[in-house]
Amino acid sequence: MTLCVLDKMGDVELGRKVFIQKCAHCHNDEPGGKHKQGPNLFGLVGSKTGQSPGYSYTEANRNRDIVWDAETLNTYLHNPKKFIPGTKMIFPGLKKKVERQNLIAYLETRK
Image 1 (tube, rainbow, N blue to C red):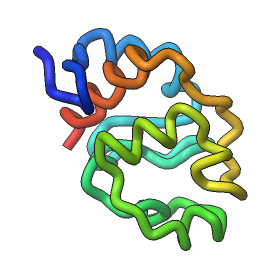
Image 2: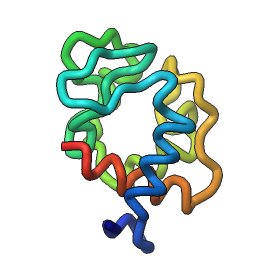
Image 3: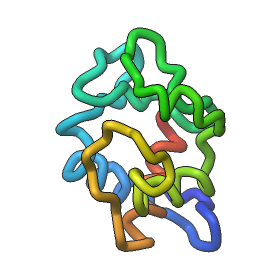
């Protein structure tokens, strides 16, 4: 299965693998799943930053006031600390565009 992400199609299955390899250490993506070091990402796409109930976000995340979509996720995932200065996310980002496209395609299915 593929979904349109920005200017290229992202591969959902490859995105699931990126999630497992690079995100699952700190994030859950299951419905009703517990927060880990980072918030549960189920239902992330279409939601506002810093709003997942029960997770303690930084003020920077709570006040960013953006909606997560393919464009904002692409920018954030490339360099989280640049996109949201003051975030506590320690992940340096995904420099490969294809990895970001695939991961976003996967996250779009987690609703």
